[in-house]
Length: 149
Image (cartoon, rainbow, N blue to C red; front, side, top):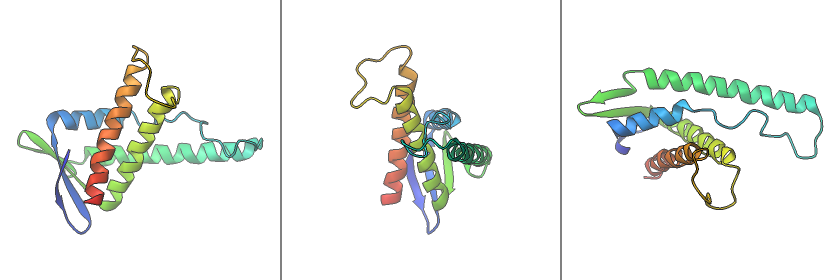
């Protein structure tokens, strides 16, 4: 994923076919953070507050998933360009994608058991989560480079 053009309010990225397929595979996994993982606070036992938080996060994730499908299925936003692909997004959408990839990364980390350091050993059970974490990090890094550059 390489930034091709940046205008005042939009970005165009070049994606090799394999990268486009990886991008779609990773984004298809959203959301990965388990429901009820995020607590109102550690000491707060008020279930009504927790239920409100859980409902708000669920609604936000449903809307994010809907918007994600809309952007990725738009032939103007994600278009074939010869042997490769172009992804066109606004600056706001790029920042939003950054948040989506971060949630996927964090969700993968949680599913890996929230390790304090590197994963000790790859197993059949944890390899998909490790792969997802690494791919989300890859795309997140490309977006950050575009925003910084």
